[in-house]
Image 1 (cartoon, one colour):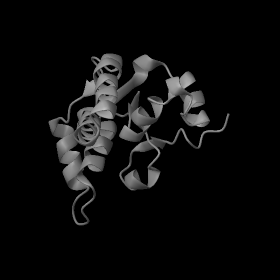
Image 2 (cartoon, helix red, strand yellow):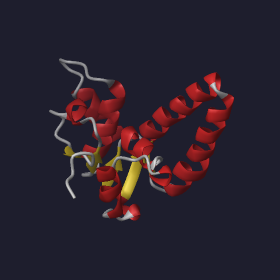
Image 3 (cartoon, one colour):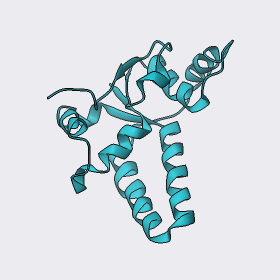
Length: 141
């Protein structure tokens, strides 16, 4: 099972326009969509991004809002994982004695406690947390 980070979901939005990174496109073609999930934290980050664009550019914001509601929520219906108690405790352990970015630890903890692979471009953000990582930008065809 694969937990997609925010940057992966955002990159996949570009597939239909032909602007997605070719390695990400190839990687995505090898993955069973039923095996892909997102965290509620990823949904939170995407919602913030959409709201920021809506605040500054109504037209672009409407496009992103449609993508989020029609594509992301539909695609991942039933596959949006909440931050549960096990993940919350795991994330807290990574903050002591050296605090890490909270959203990254929540996402990583969701993957670790569910024995999932985290798919992200930002490998360095998750190193040292014991999560299995895949960077689809680095996968060679």
